[in-house]
Image 1 (cartoon, rainbow, N blue to C red):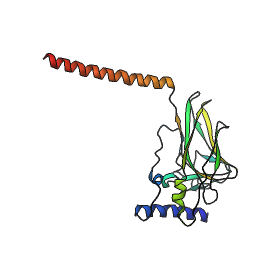
Image 2 (tube, rainbow, N blue to C red):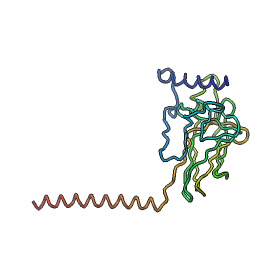
Image 3 (cartoon, rainbow, N blue to C red):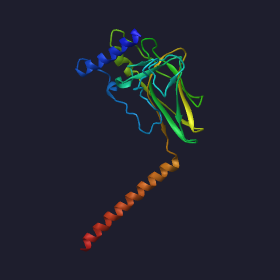
Image 4 (cartoon, one colour):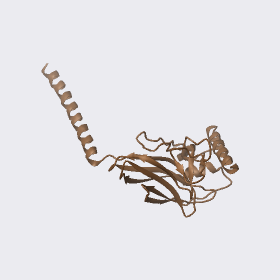
Length: 219
């Protein structure tokens, strides 16, 4: 508990230093991640926290005690994934394809890299390993973790009206997880129809403009 509180204070202190121009963060640290309104994940940025027990708020669930962290991408809250799986049941459309995307970074105070898997409908759909980073304990921790965040994604297809999305670390490592999104992927036929409509609208506009120009010449 004391270690977690100390880290949260350090992260907030680092942000205050940056705001005052007394510290320089990597470019990635100031790039805000905006969650898409099309995402079917609730609390994907882990901004909401539970009032008792684990700080992981519903509808996320964890098998065991799991705590949140202040070390999210761009300085926002996140959660930690370790040997304790975290999951959320999503409302889906059968046969619809979705893209799962999220940011993850290793907990550099304990692990210089991390491996984790993503499950969809209780089936493993992808495993990821972060690059190996270095940690300088003479410098502020937060900018180093923020620079270690990477974006990961995988496409999946819903088999039913609901699917269980789950994250768990592998090989005994631990990572920070943030900005989880699951967004419907348009079908190729829908995309083609959309492009066709745009072309027709453009041609109609050109035709109307050309007609006005011809009338001007006749006058």
